[in-house]
Length: 197
Ligand SMILES: Nc1nc2c(ncn2[C@@H]2O[C@H](COP(=O)(O)OP(=O)(O)O)[C@@H](O)[C@H]2O)c(=O)[nH]1
Ligand SMILES: [Mg+2]
Image (cartoon, rainbow, N blue to C red; front, side, top):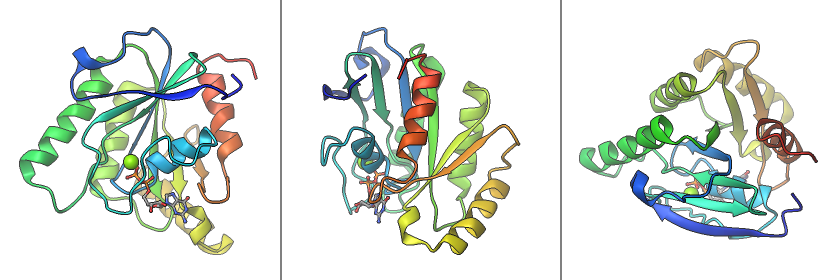
């Protein structure tokens, strides 16, 4: 992949709308506003292919991005936004669960948590869903640029603890501002999808 051809494919709310292509998918799950869209943009070196927002709770769809016709990056709806109705929250979690449970092309789901905060109960639930679908857990701690090295180290310990991460699980600090973790992320994606670098 040379990342020269990254494009938005479609937004879906149900399986019949998912792209028909049979290429591996890497999905991104995390709280609303955690930095999923920024993560995707950073991976692709694009400023605003995936729409980012300082207002949380705006993306109630599954957004698919095609990279060099080789993989899809999948931006899942952000959970845990307080100001939406209970019904709306249920709709979103059903949407995520349906995708995780039914999508054959799904190669792996990365969990994004905010490096500054203790993972929420929703994050713990999400980690459990991911473990049900995949072997192991790969977590990126976003917005790492907002912390000192010492604070970051301390917080990574808390994240490992709260998410009950095993020795084989992976936790990587990420910054969409500075590019921290970007190479690691691509290494993992290429490995998972069997792509030669
Ligand atoms: N400083 C910093 N801000 C970030 C980072 N990632 C995301 N943000 C900001 O956090 C907000 C939410 O990001 P967004 O990607 O839209 O989150 P999403 O809701 O999970 O897709 C935006 O204002 C981003 O600019 C990061 O690594 N560092
Ligand atoms: Mg987003």
